[in-house]
Image 1 (spheres, rainbow, N blue to C red):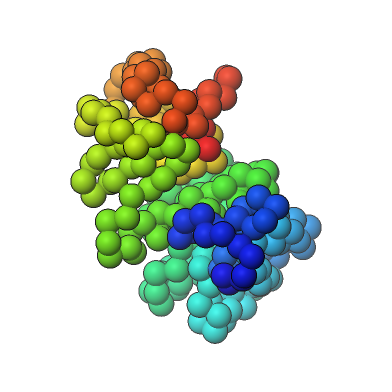
Image 2: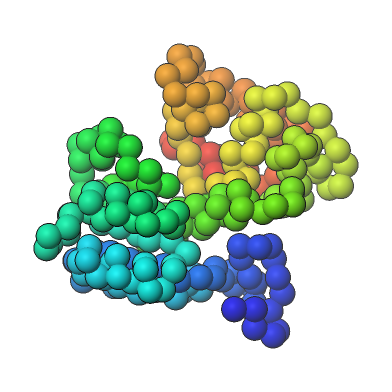
Length: 245
Ligand code: CA
């Protein structure tokens, strides 16, 4: 995938001479609705992925076995003998390919979460294709971070985060963070491009069931901005939450 004339940005992304960020790897999209499958296909291709479509669970399993994709986007409502839940279980039994599950409704999502299928992320329809691409990148980035044998730091903006040593540098200068500030920052840099609500950040960083005021998040974000300044590309998305780019 590393064509000449391109500059390596990091392990998960490439930037070509036009500054367009390209992903790499193959994504299998298991979805029987052609319109949705083609839309996902288009956006993932534009992001630099090779895309293979499967209309049924059986075909999806075949493609995963034959092509060893980087990731699977799996719709739960599938025709044929295998529904998405069974397909997910089968893929988990067969290996550790990252899986993003797409569900039709919020109530279905609640039920699916209870099954603990081991998927890496979940999206409820309708979703924006851009959001899906951001999720795909985030899941792959997490996998690559986890797979790296060396403790390679993550670079976002002018901030370098070393999650192994729990050290942070902004513009090359080491910055002291509290444990919670560090955990929040690590969550942002591992999930760039995704908008998180304050509630989601509390669940992910402070822990599920943490009872507290959502303004706690704002306080910590303010501290991160004070300590890291413009080095950290962290945007406030009004009415929603925060997004790190
Ligand atoms: Ca479907």
